[in-house]
Amino acid sequence: MFLSIAVDGPAGSGKSTVAKAVAKNLGITYLDTGAMYRMVTLDVLRNKVSIKDMEAIKTLLDKIKIEFRTEGLFLNNDDVTTEIRNDVVANHVSDVAAIGIVREKMVAMQREIAKGQSIIMDGRDIGTHVLKDASHKFYLVASVEERAKRRLLEFEAQGIDMTLEELMKDIERRDGIDSNREINPLKQAHDAILVDTTKMTIEEVINFIMSEVNHA
Ligand code: CDP
Picture 1 (cartoon, rainbow, N blue to C red):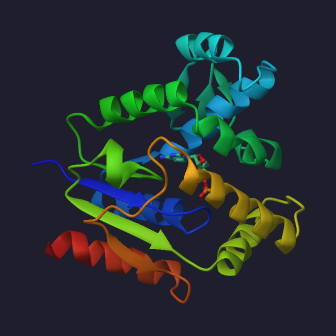
Picture 2: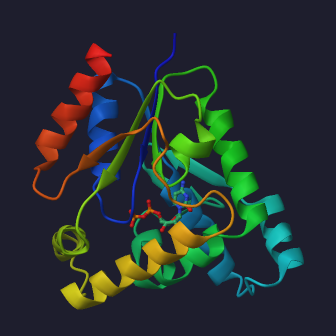
């Protein structure tokens, strides 16, 4: 039996840090689905395509090459590991991720990757849609301020200059678009375990998920 673990939640709730660590502990594959939407967004920006121009978006999607290599994340053979985290991409990603044909293509790729192996995926629609039958589902939340503080620390470590206010605004704006879009919005799956991480350390969240997975 393969393990399939879904981790969803709003921006900056700690999903990717936690999912990465759990994957390492269990020796299973980790898939960062947000990075995939970020790569599509960068492709759209690089090609100066309007998000209203579905023909042009479709042409991009037909030839897009998204790869998770050991050395980093590659978009059409170009290492974009750092670039997809910048604020220009962050400002546009939720609008791009709301486009139906973008989601169709990404979800198909995600399900293809999940086939025949144990996997943990993090995103917005994993427990409700991509891995509806996942053996374990978690929905991570935290206050907006706490999430912005975490992002600030990550950005500071990378030398990226942004204020707490800017980060709070970005998080609230993206949460709004992600929760209100028509197709597979951000929502807790009815069978997901809610984890409020506001007052928890990353280690505590990882340990909680590990114990749920090991004892369920
Ligand atoms: O790391 P952070 O929480 O800031 O975001 P992310 O996981 O990198 O995702 C970036 C954006 O991609 C989100 O704000 C969503 O708009 C979109 N996304 C999505 O629509 N569905 C997913 N499964 C994952 C991300």
